[in-house]
Length: 406
Ligand SMILES: [Fe+2]
Ligand SMILES: [Fe+2]
Image (cartoon, rainbow, N blue to C red; front, side, top):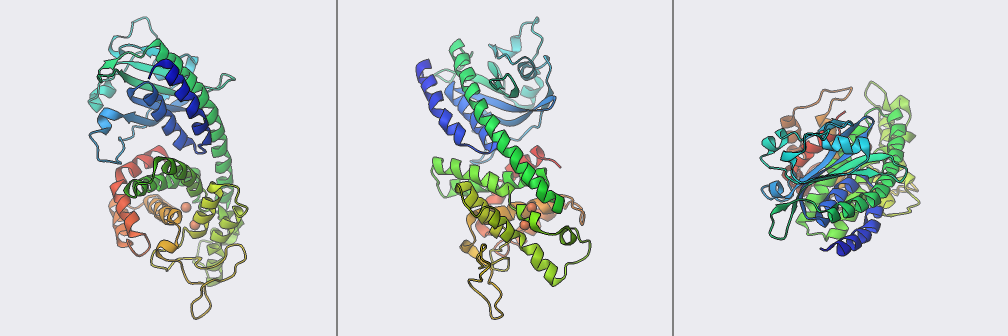
């Protein structure tokens, strides 16, 4: 692409980025597109958290080509202080972009240096580097994009040009607008979730972020297997990430006396606890968008089981009318594909996280025990196809667990 074409491409991406609601989905996309537009082999995107910047996504086409399809690079959770000693730290501290021809011959007068240890660990040599801030119009730094190893037409590593610098800075400015908005959405969601957490202390920010991350991985595996087109895949994973975070938000409506009861529930109490699915669905009743619809489906059906033994079953969430009943008039559970795909995915992700983590009533299980339990529920509690996909993307699942620790 020549630079006019590159600029046109960036402008066309603008509306696309602005449609993305979820922060993680957006950060990943920003990095992908930044690399694409200047043909860079690798890169990382950092987000600012207080006084540090943290890597959120790393991409590397050369290393990626050696992995199984769908497998992602192992995630290294690197936190850097915002100071002038590292390149990304320098960019976050000063708000200036840095373009380096060769990381192995940085001039000794520069305040920053390159830690070649990363290359030794990964077996991949980083040479050319372009690092730009994600800076709002008011000058606030939200993060940093670092792209590595520009390639020419022959696939040789070359320096990033002045034009590339211009184009990427322009792109970063647009991306920052989208990121600022997505961060606001995330903050609002987390506030809603902390209200549910007041009722049920298990529903924490890290828990819902992990469940949402796992759900997206499982969905991507499903979408690849069923050849979803790119557009649909991007749209639905973005909606799912948000809907999954809200799976238990209906717990705001359940009394503390029940949710925090240390002893076993009576039958009546159990019924009330189960009604968090209906309350959740009701929160999204006046559907304004696709994401509301998906959030309602997830909240309503995330406790249904593949074999029909879950709840709340065939009931109208808004009127409470029983639509299909057993002999005693209790609603029959939904089974198989009667349960929306989104809810089947979140059910698996939620149970996996609950088993893997410490809760007040239990210790964290070993991963072997968790995986065994999930296998045992294949075709019973869980959609058997999704369990298979879960095992295929298991290494990505572990990466997400590292990103959102308790
Ligand atoms: Fe739930
Ligand atoms: Fe949960």
